Amino acid sequence: MSEVMFGLGSNLNNPVMQLQNALNNLSMYFALQKVSNTYKSQSLLKDNQEDYYNIAVLAKTDKTPQEILSITQKIEKDMGRIKLKKWGERVIDIDIIDYNREIFKSDNLEIPHNQMIYRSFVLKPLQDIMPDYIHPELKISVHDMINNLKDDYNITICQNKFVF
Image (cartoon, rainbow, N blue to C red; front, side, top):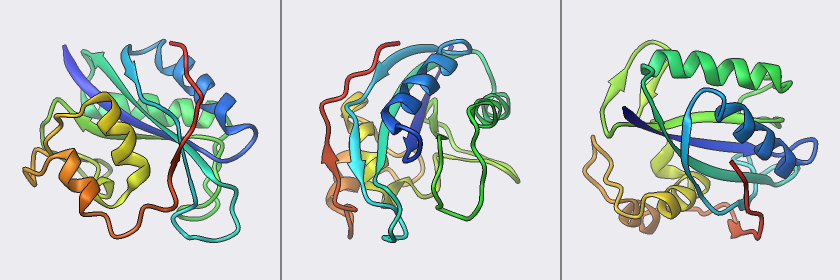
């Protein structure tokens, strides 16, 4: 079995409920192991969007990265995600952050997630579930990636706990 780490985010239609619904959906396909604390942050665009709520999830799977991508895209679609603009509002976003500490690149998928090192709302939750994580390509610890951030998007930890 392989380990896959997901980053989930939402800022529409009761985001905390959307994260729980996404966890419920993911649990139908993957053996969920850990869920991070919930973090709230402003949008990447720093515009007037509602704040985002984000979590990281560690799961076990026998599926390939491409199969996982198909599943996560189906879950997003079934939950009502519509892409209106890049980094725009969303009911749910499910990103594959890491797969078995391996490097995977194709036309439609790059693992580890190619923007993770710039995003506090990915790194802080990741640190919760895997404090010893080392980026497989850059060989940098999650702790050092957090310390290297130029912007934390006003991230704060929330009290929400999720059930899976």
